[in-house]
Image (cartoon, rainbow over all chains, first blue to last red):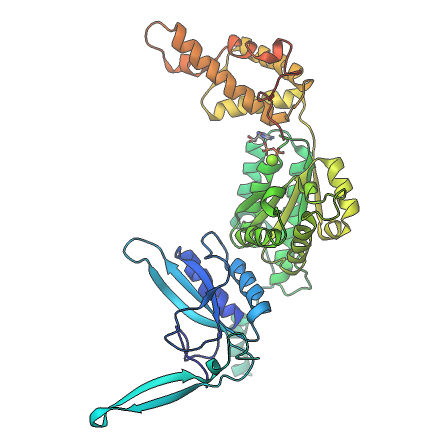
Length: 141
Length: 318
Ligand SMILES: Nc1ncnc2c1ncn2[C@@H]1O[C@H](COP(=O)(O)OP(=O)(O)O)[C@@H](O)[C@H]1O
Ligand SMILES: [Mg+2]
C-alpha cells in the first residue's frame, strides 16, 4: 500500500528535477529546508529523525539535493525520507511545505486495522503499520 | 502546392535559431558591463584582464554553440589564481563569479571564501560534515579556497586535509553544473601542491597568474582608493606616498595593494587627529578631504620601518 503523507502525495513520486524546483521555491521564500527519515510510516508518527541540520544558509537547491543524496546513500533502501520547509518569520514559525522524497525499496506493507468492540456496540478503531511489528532498522530490509 | 507555401512561415517560426549575434549577446548578457567594471575598478593587472576577457569570449561562444545545437561540452570552469598577497585575487574572484552568473554557468553567482580551517576538522568524523557544509553553501556559486595548499600536509600522513581533498575532488568532477571552485595562493606553493595532487591539476582548466604591482601602479591604486572615499592627496603627500611605497616594498609582510589600503587607513586616522588637534574654526570640505604630507610621513615605515616590529599590522599579512 503506497503511503500518502504531506503535499503531492496523490501524484506520482516527484523526480529529482521536480524536487529541485520545489526546493528552490522554498529557498527563494527564505524557508529553512530540513531532511528527515523514518521506517515507521504511521501518519501520527511525529518522531522522524533529522538528517543533519536544518539548511538555513544554502543559496541553491543543488546544495539540498547533495545532502538528500547523501541521506539516500545511507537510508534510501530501507527508509522514508521527507523534506520539509520551515518558515521562521514572526507569526508563522511553522512548516510551510512537507513532502516525501524517498520510499523504501521493499514493499510497503500497509496497515492492519484493529476494531475493538465496546459497550453498546461501540467500535473503536486503531491502525498499526505492519512494518512496525519488526524492530527499527529491520522493517524494510 | 499552395498549401505547402502557406505552411512555410509557420515552420520557420517553430525552428530553432540559425544565427547568433555575439556582439549583441555580449551586451545583453551583461558580460560587457562586468568587464568594463573590471577595467575601471582594477588598476593594472593587464595579463589578468586579458585572460578573463579570453575566458569570457570562450564561454560566450560555447553558449552560442549550445543554442545552435552544435557539439559542445560543459566547459571545465575550475580555476587557480596565483600571486602574492594583495594582488587582487579575491577581488577578481568576485567579478568572476558575477561573470559566470551572467553567462548562466552558475545559477546564483555568490562567492564563498574559505581557508583550510573552514574545511578541515579537528578530530575523526569532523572533516566530512564541515567540508560538505561549505560545499552546500557554495552551490550555485563559486567556492574560493584561499591558500589551498594548506589542505595538503604530506608531513602528517593522518592529516584530515586529505579527506577534504577527496570530497572536493568528487564534487568538482561530478557536479560541475552546480559549483565552480577557485584555488588561490602563492604561485610556487600552488605548483608544488598540484605536483602532489594531480587530481586537482587535471580538474582545473584555467590558471591565472597575478603579478606584483609596480610602484606606479600602487600609487595609482592609492589614488583610486582615496577617490572612492572622497579623499585626495596634496602634492607633497603624493611625493611622500611615493617614498612610502618604495620603502614599504622592501620591508617584511609587504602585501601589494592591501599594504596600500592599510597605509591609507592609517593616514586617514592621522589626518583626523591632526584636524581635531590643530583646527581653529570651521573646516570646509577641501580641508576634511585633504591628506597631507605629515599624515604619510609619520608612518613607522620611514623610521626604521617594520623590521622586527611585532605584529606588522601596517602591512597586513596574507
Ligand atoms: N588592481 C587593483 N586596483 C585597485 N584595488 C586593488 C587592486 N588589486 C587589489 N586591490 C585592493 O587591494 C586589497 C587586497 O586585494 P585582494 O583581492 O584581497 O588581494 P588577494 O586576494 O590577492 O590577497 C583589496 O582591498 C582590493 O580592493
Ligand atoms: Mg585574498
